[in-house]
Length: 416
Image 1 (tube, one colour):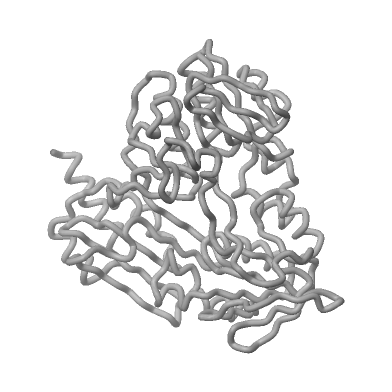
Image 2 (cartoon, rainbow, N blue to C red):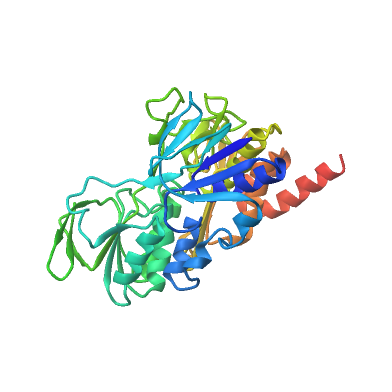
């Protein structure tokens, strides 16, 4: 059996390892188009603050791991896929045949339509090459502008602050991490960052970036101007679906897959950021560009490629951030459901916030700021789909009682 995996991120690596266990005699190849060994983008912030060197971002030891598992690792770009002929064509013109193909091509940063993005002082923070450029320009005391205060932006923000730069953040939304936190929680995060000396501009956008001779000038929609040695864009990502665009393989926001991670072509699978898979909370098929989803997808896709049927029951949408010392998180349907109830604790003076969202007597979503002791319990109650019964009414009165609710309800289940 010939297995080809296009993409060398977490989804691709986990898939290859799972395939090797499930099919010891198969030919397995991972094809990645970056010059470095397979690495984790989530480790890049640690590289930026010198907690690790480049090799610390590698997912596995490239000198021995893949060779020991007899997994071929190719550092080339796949130019075309021919599903009818079951082959892929590489940048050097070579063709490789497959029995089963996994698309684990990930996603790419979205570039906003801003004049001046092509300047050498402007970078995204997505690849190791991006990180090298950021390290070169983001020296202690230098002025840096970060465009975007979403989840990825706030991870980069944390690393930049630790590098000692003078940081300004520009976010078009009315709050920080608008796809993760509501107005109150996002507002707390913004106030916290401002108190830490970060210049935060919400409900604001960048109109243009121009060369100032010594750096760049960033013109804002509110009329303000910022001088910077470096501008970093973190304005979202989009699934890498180009390889199958124009083919019979169905795509929407990502490559559409079923619960077996199988595309509309039965011999082609997709996993990770490129896959539009099932969401745990809604049952809808959505793109979830987070690493836990990628690893889940990769494992399940590989088992099905090897003929060991398994189904994906959905990954819980979850985000946890440490932003210059303030922990925030959200899980599941944190924004609530139609007709659902909610409970809230809001203590802005102490930078503490909890919001619980219910559908009937199930907890279906939660978010918090500054209350780290509740993070695991929130996730556990949502994923377990436990009936809270009378505990729902208690939580509506006091959402901080979530630990007691979890212990009581799980203990009750253990006796049934």
